[in-house]
Amino acid sequence: MMKELFGGSSPYRVTLFFGPEPVQGTIEVLACVFNVKKRSWKAGIQVVVEIACEQVARLRQALRPTDRLAVPLLALDLEERQAAEQRIEELFVQAIAWCKLARRIETGLAQENQRISCTDLVVDVDRIVVDRQADIVAYILSELDLVPDQSSSSTS
Image 1 (tube, rainbow, N blue to C red):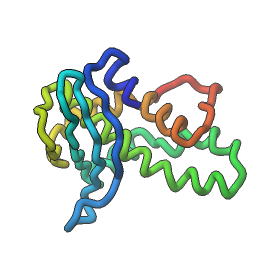
Image 2: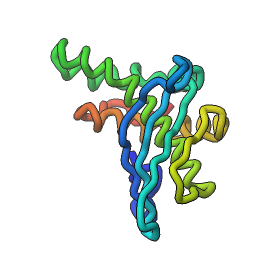
Image 3: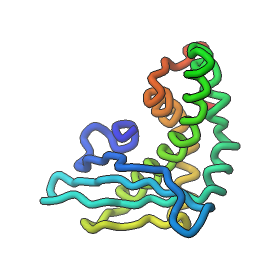
Image 4: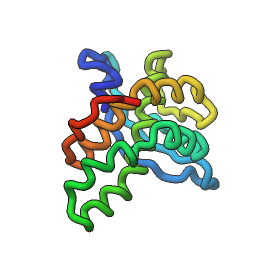
């Protein structure tokens, strides 16, 4: 996912550390933690990216990732399919968090551990997720070790 969002020549190396997990004290916000290292920095930083569950639900309704993954999931046996279906939500939230982090990096990222609040960049992230829906589906398929459905190349 990083290559699609940051480009191959990005000065940043970004890796997902963990998440999504509920933010302590609430069930309405999820967070992913990323390690971010810029080539010119001596050390990397951790960035906590918060996503409101309401935003996830809105984007899920708009993109319908489960529907877009239905055909590739049919290639799995029932037990594998059920496990994959449970991971789709987790991977979808991770993808939204990647998009939010990519946007923050575009606007400038200080070399300090930080948190991007669930209220930051909401409109930008909504737009990016919709614009990058093909990349998001490809990310989920890749993480599930599935081959994309070649019968439809539409991103809508």
